[in-house]
Amino acid sequence: MIMNTKIVVIITLITVFLIGGGVVLATRGQTPKVTGLDDFSRCLTHNNVIMYGAYWCPHCQAVKAEFGASFKYVNYVECTVETKKCTDNNVKGYPTFIKNGIERLDGETSLQKLADFAGCKLPASK
Image (cartoon, rainbow, N blue to C red; front, side, top):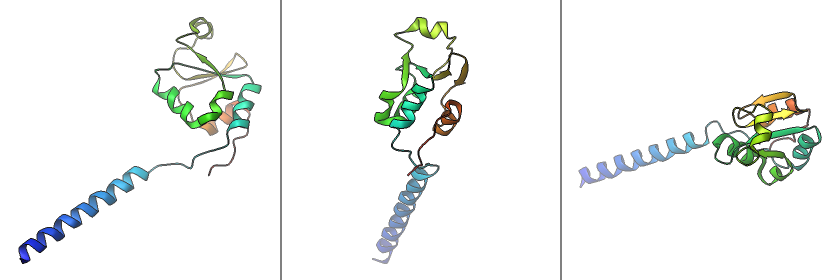
């Protein structure tokens, strides 16, 4: 009887430890989510920033996910469809942000770095 109780206690402690560790790992490194990006997205387009990407690109998908529904206001070129635009702008990787047809920001980037690049104000995170 005492042996069975010890086993139950040990199994319970191991389970609690594993679940607690999983929660810590799952929430580690998460940054606050920025919401309300409609004005920011419109500012990118107003300031002649174009995102070049591909539907299959995981980095492009991550950027699009950060924008959420506000991505519809971003000037976006799908390079698998508009290949000439991408070739003409020397797009070699995805995503690539080009401002005024000259300045470039290559690769997956933070919204803050994109805001600095574009000269747009990013709303406060929540």
